[in-house]
Structure formats: structure tokens, C-alpha cells
Image (cartoon, rainbow, N blue to C red):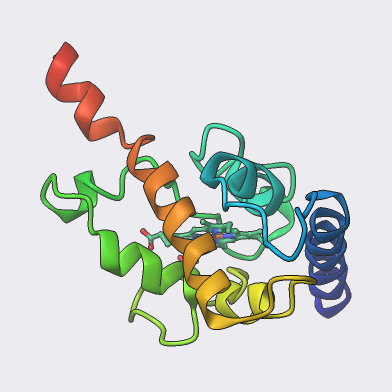
Amino acid sequence: MARQHRMILIVVTVTALGVSWTVPLSAGQAAAANGSDLFKSYCVVCHGADARGTGPLATSLSKRPADLTVLAAGNGGTYPTEMVARIIDGRNPVKGHGGGDMPVWGEAFLKTQGAANEEAVRERIDAIVSHLRGLQREAVATDRQ
Ligand code: HEC
């Protein structure tokens, strides 16, 4: 089990490095954070392309990754923007959310090549939070049901 955990961390770290190598940086300026790209690079491996918690690594984790399309539904229909940002950051944990195999992205992003500062960390997290807002099933459900 412990070995499996280490493997997962290595995969995530490699993914993180891969992105910092491939994201083109214009002269002296970090590329604008793109929530959809960040989600594909850092989250899909566990949460799945549809964000419902069934990524390729999901079955090797001790706890199933959360379904990220029901964050609004789980909060009485309102998307909890600040809470989602705090869960993703992970450095100031939200009781009952994240933890376990969910990486601490605030720390991981702080080590990103070329964008290792709090402002860049916040920008990335905000971009992901906005992207996830668009994936909430709640909004779709009101239109169709
Ligand atoms: C190594 C696997 C893994 C990766 C990669 C990962 N997560 Fe998670 N995530 C989890 C697990 C497992 C949980 C469930 C933790 C729990 O319930 O204790 C979780 C929980 C969450 C939650 C809490 C949902 C809730 O309702 O409590 C959010 C939000 C979240 N992840 C967002 C993200 C985002 C955004 C990314 C990419 C930046 C990401 N995760 C990458 C494994 C992962």
C-alpha cells in the first residue's frame, strides 16, 4: 500500500514537471492560467475527464476521488467558490474535504518552474475553480428537468 502511494505521488510530480516544461512563457511573463488545461494536466488522472471521480488512477487510491460535478448540489445548489479554492489549495484544509490522496496543490504549484509565487498559485487555483463551476450538474439539471 505504502509503495502504491509513492507511485501515485511520482506520477503526479512528473505530470507537474511536464507542464512546466511545455507551457510556453512569453518574455518575462507567465502564460495566463487556463482552467481547462490545468484541469487536464493535474486533475483528470484521478477525477477523470468528466470530473466525476473515475480517472485512470481512481481504483488504486484508498478513497475514491470526489465527483467534482456535484459541488454545487452538495451545497444546496450554490457553487461554493471560496471553499472549492481552499480545498484545492489544501494548505488550510476544509474539514471533511480533500486530504488523504488529494494532493496539496497550493504547495505543488508553488514549486512550478517559472511561476513559483503566491500570485501565480492563486491565479491557477482561481482558473481551475472557474472551470469547475462550468462543470456543475446542478445548472444543467435546472434547464432540463
Ligand atoms: C492523486 C489523485 C488526485 C489528484 C491528482 C487530484 N485529486 Fe482531488 N481528490 C482526490 C481524492 C482521493 C479526493 C477525496 C478526498 C476525500 O474525500 O477525503 C479528492 C477530493 C477533491 C475535492 C473535494 C470535493 C469534495 O466535495 O469534498 C476537490 C474540490 C478536488 N479534489 C479537486 C481537485 C482538483 C481541482 C485537482 C487538480 C488540480 C485534483 N483534485 C487532483 C484525489 C486527487
